Image (cartoon, rainbow, N blue to C red; front, side):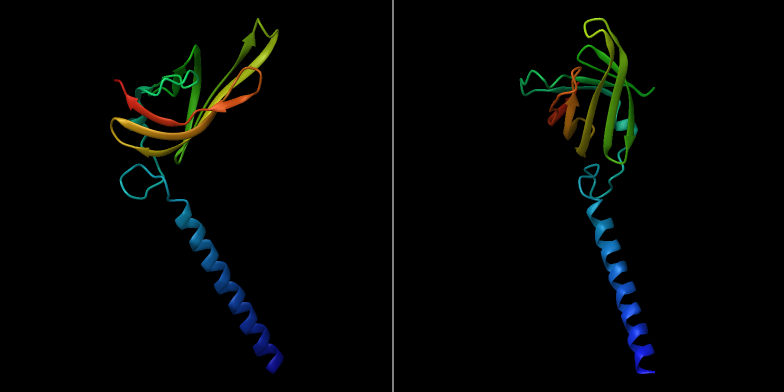
Length: 142
C-alpha cells in the first residue's frame, strides 16, 4: 500500500511540475508585443506603408510593405508573411549574373510597433547566401 501511495504522489508531483513549466514558457512568448502592453500578435494593418531607417547604414534598406503581401526593399520585390511578431519576406528568381536561381530573404522580429515607429531585430540573406544585420528603428514615411 505504501508503494502505491508513493507512486501516486510522485506522478502528481511530476504532473504539477509540467504545468508549472508550461505556464512559464507561455509568459515568455508575450515579450516584444505591439507596444500596447503584452500581446505578441502584430496587426498587419499597422505594417502597411513605407518604412525608413534614419541611421545611414548601407545595408539598412528602406522597406515598403503592401496589403497584398508583397514588399519591396533594395531592388527586390518579395512576398511576405507574418506569424505573431515574426516577419519573413522572400524572393526566388533566376539571376543572370549568378547563372542560377537565387533566393533572398529578410527576416526580423518586431520588438515594438506604433503607428509611426517599428523596432526590429533580424537578418537579411544576400544573393550569395551570406547574412547581414537588419535591425534597428524604422520610421513610417507614408
